[in-house]
Length: 497
Image (cartoon, one colour):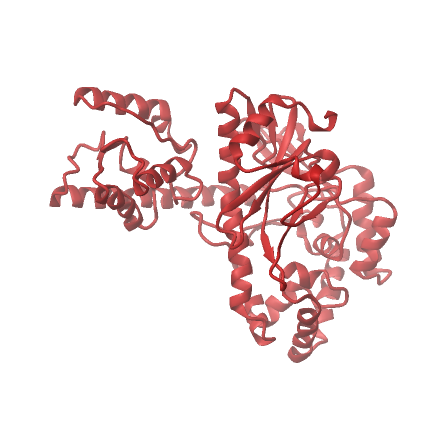
């Protein structure tokens, strides 16, 4: 079920499929469904994945698959991908029929041509919808409205009605309820606004570095908007973000049709200057940008690369965040500007792209897996009679209206000695009552087990565990997500335990 047309609701599809089956004397033995998914890729579609897995493994106790129409099988941008999954079913002796498309899927040339056209149209429909949505979002940016994302330190989101009148502030994780409503940025609490202005003055007028500013903020007990300590990188982001002078800038990075994230050229950015009330004077902001640019402009290409080599030698790997956290070094944006891309700079200092790609690909795979694990957990809780709601902004789950659950994935890391370990990052900013830590198996292709951690453990920020751990921690280990779901149904807030 996608979210764009009511006719594609799972209830409507189920009714049409059952009518189709009844008219032909077909018995329906099982239903696979994906709720609220656009079908652009297999990722996140647990229903279709389960169906294909059952067919491949020979677990299918059926010889026919009924699908509402070709677009419900998938809106894949490559029509061959849709055909591939159908071919796997047919190869296993299981036929696929489309109930309302008006043709017999009998392998004839006519059926093959019709399916090919409908698959292409389904993918093209998603592409055209993406173009229309992008154009609409771009127009709203040009009108001065905010499009997604947290406000950031010192700022807050505020809701406007269709006439432009202010309605109410939006807390973190809250969204507008009416399509005609709009969101703008407004100054946050006075103490945060004062802190932002102090950051700029300290950097421009007093000559303090980002690292020194971060240390002073932490010494004063001031946290970031996520409730975390300040670092050089978080201060740097404050200093380079144009929203603090009231400018609305969008499309710096894009990810269309669930493809790869792309960093766009400045001429592709969509902007509206002076859209919001500024926290910082424009001249002060520009002075900060000049200082940041001049730090790298004074260095030759070779000097910048030498700095990068030093960072690589000290840290063992490179990333934009690692570079931005090094005091006195050019920023990651400076390297992109000077060498065209970070990857090009990495190659010039001998940072192996293969090693970097493996690390990046594992993280990308885990990010793709996370929504599936969350969906499985929600389905498991509901299957055993529990109630669960998901905050779309933070992915935080609220179970039975009693307690919150955060699900985090821990990458398996192999040490030179051959042992394995996991670093579990706990979100102290969200302060969930329970954290479900998903430990990946060596190779990070499958899940090893799950740990259930109460809030008192989450206050650590990061937890390092090995193959064997103390008895208390092992008591909260589970081998299956079903066991976790059943426990979540019966348990109250873990802190009380």
